[in-house]
Image (cartoon, rainbow, N blue to C red; front, side):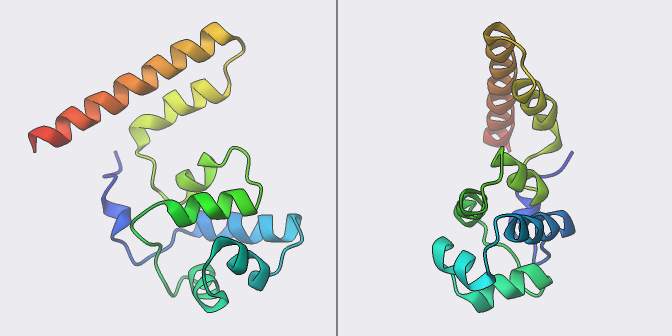
Amino acid sequence: MINPNMNRESTQVPHGFRALVKKRMEAVNLSLRTVASEVGISPAYLSRLLSGERGLPSDDTLIWKLAEVLQIDPPERLLVEAKRVPDILLPALLSAHQAASKADLKEAMKQLQAVILNQRKKRGRQ
């Protein structure tokens, strides 16, 4: 399992994150300057992120803003690519995304909540 705090301190931006951002910039036809401006960061910082010279901030705000500006659906995909979602949550997230009915979605959300609560309890004991 990925330690959820491990990648928050990393200076390395995962390749999948950089590739997805670049691909979406092309798909929505937005320049680096435009994306940086809409996200609220400098073009130089975004350029360094995409080249792997700078790391992501420890908080996920930038990732959420990028997902919104680049119209990434579902936006959580960018969090996954940034290695901000622990492996233990992925099955529950996939179940929720692929739910065929409201009952399936409700069950997937219960599973997800249980995993999150369990992780919080474990962190509280450490």
